[in-house]
Every structure is written in structure tokens, then in C-alpha cells.
Amino acid sequence: MQGVIGNRHAQMQLERALRSGQVSHAYLLTGPRAIGKTTLALAFAAALECQRRPPDGVAACGACSACRKIAHGNHPDVALIMPAADSKRGVYKIDQIREIIHLANLSPSEGAWRIFIIPEIERMEGPAANALLKTLEEPPEGVVLLLTTSEPENLLPTILSRCQALPMQPLTPEEILQTLQD
Image 1 (spheres, helix red, strand yellow):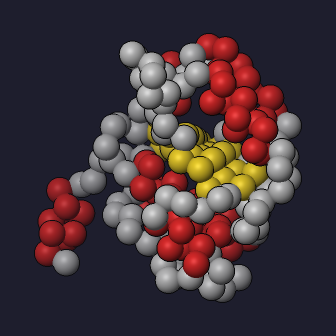
Image 2: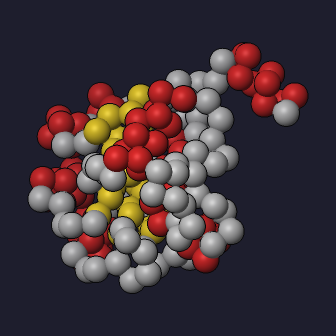
């Protein structure tokens, strides 16, 4: 995955899905804060939508229209959802999840997939988490949910059971050194 350092095991699982064409409807990237979960999710989204990626390839080209739009955050089929700005606690509200559900039931505008990246889903209010379950249980065709959390123990068991888990770890000192040298 382009721009992702470390967590080779998680990358390999996503690459296997790309090569086989058997992409799951939901992935849950778990691990400590600030280790690249959202970065990996964005790289996977770019690889899914890339217009120049060969069928057996795993990396986005970074140059096509879809890759550029994802990098700039304005691809109509890739949404990075953040907690409600008006919330004092920074939580996801049910209205945000209802909007995701609505958009998930629409056909993709430009790409082959409609992708939703939701970081820190442990910050989801109870009603919002319950609303998301409907889409996790009966995902529309061509929809991929990329969820991240540093606190999987605080998620509903039904959310955990409906996602393919991708555990991630902090970089090793060797990986950090190699990256700095490169």
C-alpha cells in the first residue's frame, strides 16, 4: 500500500483481497492511536478506486483522477467521516450514520465502490452504533466500510462480529530507523 509503513500483516490481508477480488464489506483496523490506521484505510480506498491499477496489482498509481481526488479528499465515492463538530465530546451522532446509510444505498458516482472511512468508532453514540449495524448486517452491493478503533473492547459485540479485523501495532525501532534512513 502506497505511503504506509509497517503493519505488513494488515497490508497483506488487504492486498490479498485486492488480488482475489474478494473485498469484504467491512474492515475494522484496531491498534493504539496514531499508528496509521486511517492512513492504511485511505491507501486501501485509493487502491480500490484507482483507474490504473492492474487487476493483479495492489497499489494505487497516485496519478489518475481517482487517486488525486482521494488524496485531496474530494472523491464523490470515498467519504472520510469525522465526529460531529457541534458535539462537545466529539462523538458520532445518529444523523451522521443515517446519512452514511442513505449514501450507501446509492450507486457509486465515478468509481467501482462507495467507501466510508470512519475513524475512532468507539466515539459513536449508542443509537448511532445501532443504526450502523443495519448496514453491517445487510451491506449494499459495492459498499466498503473501513472502521478504525483504539478501543475495540468498547464496541458492540455485533459490530465486532460483522467486520474483518485487522490488528495493527506500533512501528518497531528497526522500521523507524529504516524509514528515517530512506
